[in-house]
Length: 351
Ligand code: SAM
Ligand code: ASE
Image 1 (spheres, helix red, strand yellow):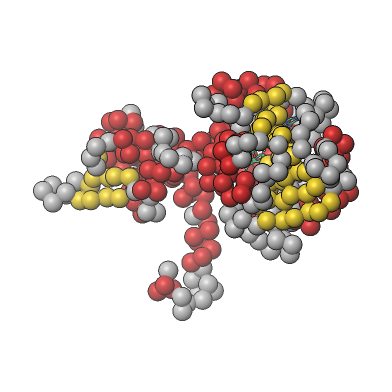
Image 2 (tube, protein in one colour; image 1 turned 90 degrees about the vertical axis):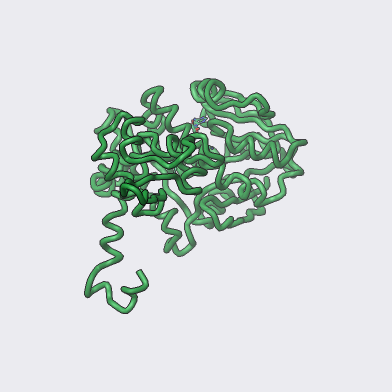
């Protein structure tokens, strides 16, 4: 863009047009994920032509070629032109191999699938959600707006895909989040709404002498055990309902991406329930969220997530002061905030 720097956005709206393209760029990457382009290219011993890719993926040559060229255009794939006959040969970049292939070391494949198949269509309801100030689950699925997880888990397939999204985030931010504060003093750690156990795995790795339990709804625990649990995992699962059932005893309760799903009232209800079972003096709660700046002027990531929460839940993203206020109102003290500089931040409070 350097050549445009002298020109004003008013002369020609470069940035604006780039933003317009945002959804097309997303869909190019997501479609390639769904088709298995990155899985094919990372496992292939040599670069492949559009024809070879099309054949392997059972797709049209013309469509495949356009998609591959767009992926080269956005620098997600490499291309080399053969000297003999001018055939373009496509290969994976290191970033695509690491993050977009299914078996990549830090695969975000499942995140891409959920964004493409569930979040993208839901964002079609943004106008109504903004007008009415809530999610459109009643109209879309006949599910009341406050029955958030009835909608998120409206089928086994949706549940599995959502769990894939949740699972994949912690390969990026998990380490920073669990190292934000020393948790070594907490012997019994329960990850409330811990889903697949991806964050619990990071906690158990970083604090091997603590016992770590994932608490989630029975159907989620069942799905997690079946599809996400690894043979060498040291954390355990417990099923229940954190709003109604009995909470397991622990000295640290982790709430990762839980409070942002709920209204302020429900957040305080949940925090009070936790405070009630927490050991005074020794107990604490660790919140993990994409926090807004106090001014609400960023980060853009958190501002966009907050709209995702509007479309899909009854919650929102909040600045640290709002979490601190809810924590104090629920009986916690000594609220400490750690901005990790990545997507998710950590807030620790003690009883
Ligand atoms: N903590 C995980 C993470 O950050 O990857 C998952 C966060 S996900 C947005 C919210 C989680 O809360 C889901 O796993 C969901 O099943 C769980 N959940 C929702 N309502 C619950 C309830 N009433 N009792 C227990 N778990 C619940
Ligand atoms: C929730 C988190 C999410 C509930 C629904 C959700 C996210 C998407 N949908 O608690 C995570 C935000 N990340 C992305 C990639 O949108």
